[in-house]
Length: 164
View 1 (tube, one colour):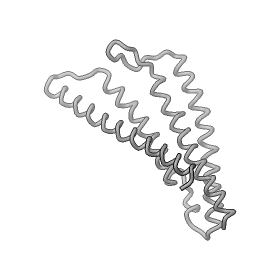
View 2 (tube, one colour):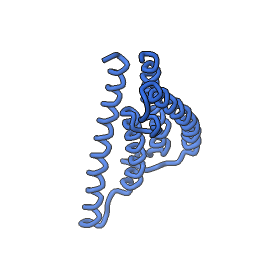
View 3 (cartoon, one colour):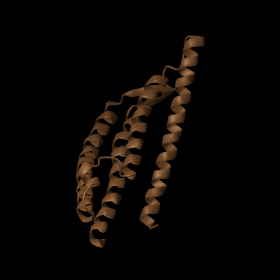
């Protein structure tokens, strides 16, 4: 296993661990909200928007992991066909994914800038105002992880074309 594969595997392990922690936290917080509403007619005011924004993080981490496993943004035609043609089609799919994801990183970075400049507060937690832009970081970060995994996959596909 090469150094690049080990790095990608390490990043995927971090993504998986973070994904598990977030989902576990979401389940516990959601259950607690239900219990508090049913038995105490209350709950945490900040929990619902917090949970909604965590869904965004879960979605992007899941997309990054799918990209790492080459099960994301694939062309159906790229998974069929003879050896070298299949490798070329997979490489083209990776290039197309990189282009789209790069454009989405740019757009999401602009959005993050607007969100930050707006000064919107998502919630107040223990007297601390939590700005909404912190949760919006998941968007360019998620697309960045997709680019990372797709770039490595594209490099492997490109090298595979010349090896065969």
